Amino acid sequence: PPWCPRTPRQPTTRFSNRLMLLQLQRRSLPSRSTSIGPVRYHLTRAIAADPPSVGTSKTTTTNVTTQRMCSACRSRHTCSFLKKAEMHTGPRIAFNQPDVHTAYAPERSHHQRTLPDGLVAFKGSEGRRRFAKSMEAGHAEAYFPLSEQFVTQSEVAFCGLASLTMCMNALRVDPLRIWKDAQGPGWRWWTDEMFPTECSGSMERLRSEGVTMDQFHVMAMANGAQVSMRRPTDHGESLSSFRDAVIHASKLSARPAFVVVSFCRSSLGQTGGGHFSPIAGYHAESDSVLVLDVARFKYPPYWVPVAKLYEACLAVDPITDRARGWFVVTVAEHLRHTFASDTS
Image 1 (cartoon, rainbow, N blue to C red):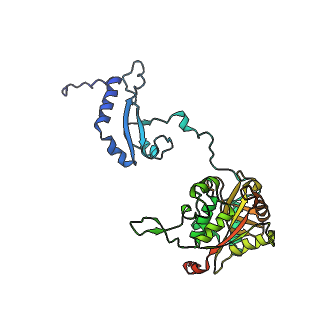
Image 2: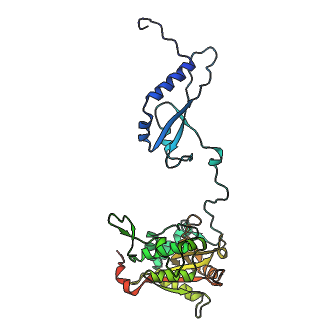
Image 3: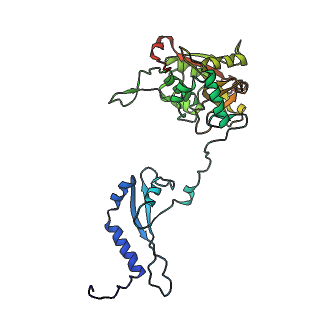
């Protein structure tokens, strides 16, 4: 009673657990989730605290286990909301971790690859030095418009379509088709799904088989680009002509052009077969080019010697039974007015 001068007896552990449970039930748990994002807390059970030491009446701390329910990632233990919830000043809350099998990477899966020897990572110190030298020599002009449109291929076999998407958006060719927001402004923008034609095959076929050089050429020409297709086995083509094409495309020009190379990954020590990617720069001292690999989930951008990349273009494509090669992609003559280069 209030008039009693004695200190009230400490509640038992079981009573304190029930009291904590009632307090949490009375609180508006969903409203607390508004401070840490779209996470909904559902009270599952109260874990009994460790029994107090013998001879003491001190109540131990109660651990309340809740289950994290996130609409975006129901089973991810790396959810960023977890850290925010741990900052809560209320009772210490422990989150249920996902099942053991979800804490490990799925079988038969990969997370990026390491660049093989002979390829220099663009983000490394040597890669940055080469890029700086290329800029000084004026051989990195293609990097800036291409990097603005640098994309990751949306499908495993869409390296050719992703490279074409980068070039067409970098050249500012108008697709004359709405990409998104048809009810609003109606944005016209190139995506991989816009390029297939009746001559190139269906989207399902390209998704399963990929793109050959001839299909790349047809889709680019049919959608407003002027393309020069070259193979190392063509008459008059050589390592020197390949180098000249790269150097010319890497310089500032009134009519910008980009080089897209079709090569065999295994010739560079990489995993996989045929691949497409654009070239964004040339470094004269090392005689290497900067490849913006559109399979960014696999390899980052890298510098590769011109001779080594040319040798990778000599590899035969098993589908066409011909050597691979490269393209020089620019705007079609009747669409040149759509490109507005910014040299400021």
